[in-house]
Length: 291
Image 1 (tube, helix red, strand yellow):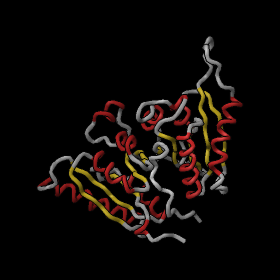
Image 2 (cartoon, rainbow, N blue to C red):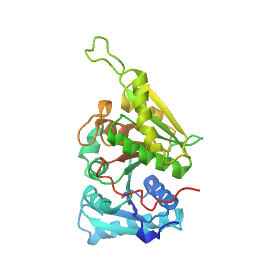
Image 3 (cartoon, rainbow, N blue to C red):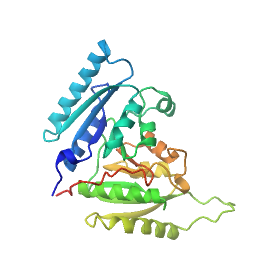
Image 4 (cartoon, rainbow, N blue to C red):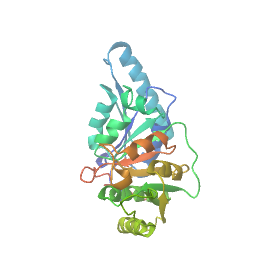
């Protein structure tokens, strides 16, 4: 039995000032309808909300609400027009969210880091719930539908498998679990893991997590190459790519892993990043199974 909508953690979506950019809002509305949870629209303006800034912000928020209501009339909607940097506002709203959904316009690495309008990286790095970055324009999916999840054997990637399995179950999709290992370099003093060892690690990580979603068809794949390149290629026609914000081996990075950052710039499907174990919000609560 599904819990009342008011008891569910909402999906929070960042509303872009450009009213022609609607892929993130559409994705969030569809996901809220599928999960039967509320959708909370957030638009932040960096200047005072009075005068022209307030009028422009209200127009953006009103247009976004109308779009979401038309897209999914049954979803409970709420909105917030806030003054402040978008990343700060969204980080605050993310505290009680099931997930945060943002748009991406494939900025360069310099633009992504320094643009005042960029919110993806800081929100992904600090949110306690999964963060979804949905690219513009819409990408083409391929049937049978599938999600891709990156696995490296860490506890962090194991939690990513949980989230990926849930998404696959909700959407009636398969799951491709990938372990990407770097090619052996001749003369390297370190003995590289064999493909069989990688496959065993991948199988052990996925098997124990996927038991909760027996309806999901799981495919295990060990690939050789650079994680960003291989994960991006594998997810070209996927419904989404799920990964931790950092991990072990080829997934090692800074606060927000280098692989996560790289995939964010090159992926053409929604990228779902999962926070470190222990910080993950209880987004699994009150999530109905797909029928």
